[in-house]
Amino acid sequence: MKVMDVMQTKVITIQTDMEIKEIARTLYDNQISGVPVVDETGKLVGIVSEGDLLHKETNPQIPEVIGILGALIYYRGVKQYESDFKKLIALQASEIMTSEVVMIGKEASIEEAASIMVSKKIKRLPVMEDEKIIGIVTRMDIIKTLMED
Image (cartoon, rainbow, N blue to C red; front, side, top):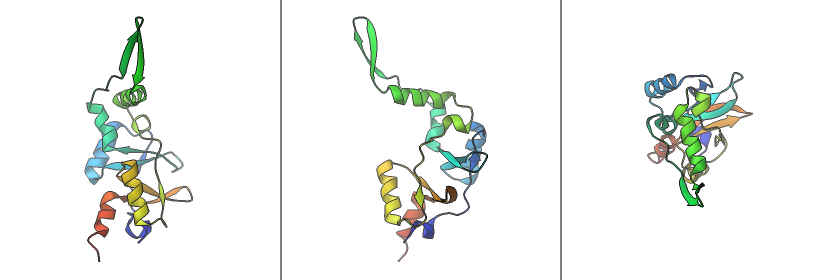
């Protein structure tokens, strides 16, 4: 079975300038856990997930430090702190989205999609063809295949 056999073809997308409140409403109203972000030409530039939005309700974890001769040296968690802080103060999609989106082609196998989702710890994969989003496959789409003969 291939990704094109189970993907959803009616993909909800948002623009880079959509405000956080509108993104939350889009996820809630459509009962989805993430949404691709496209630019004005329709090109995929990121994805916003529930996890990204949860950063608005948390405090960034302060990176671990060590004191040497009166100076503080940050040695673990600096990049994560920066990412968390940027998402905390974000006002629109372009500021909170994950820009390194993992994608898949429609001819890929379900096994390949599942493997990517597990190894990358992601819940959805935009399905791309000629740099256009033609669908999206989620964990639930793959789980549904377990019920079929």
